[in-house]
Image (cartoon, rainbow, N blue to C red; front, side, top):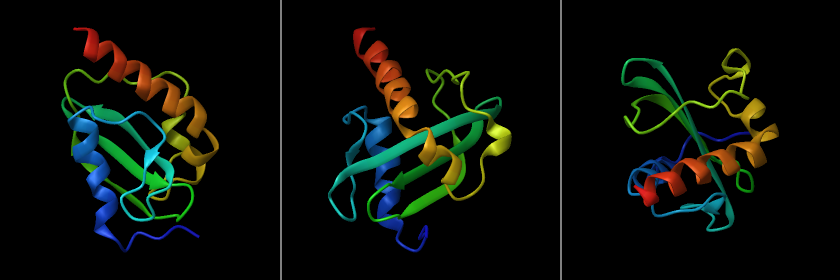
Length: 109
């Protein structure tokens, strides 16, 4: 069962913006290398973001200002997403690969 009662999971957002991690990364709560992040632009700069750990099951979901350099993927069906990352958890390998690719491309620029 997902737990959304620990705000430490939101540290993943800052770490993502600083481009310091590769995914999966260490969870700020349990410290296992099982933390993931996913986002999808909804309109303009605003979008939805999910941060979760597959091990300790802490998660966070909310509306965020998505970085301009972020490009949405084409493989996640956003209509299957919800506040808890059940669907995203089943796609975590593809998500991590995609996020790492976007971050790698940003490091080259």
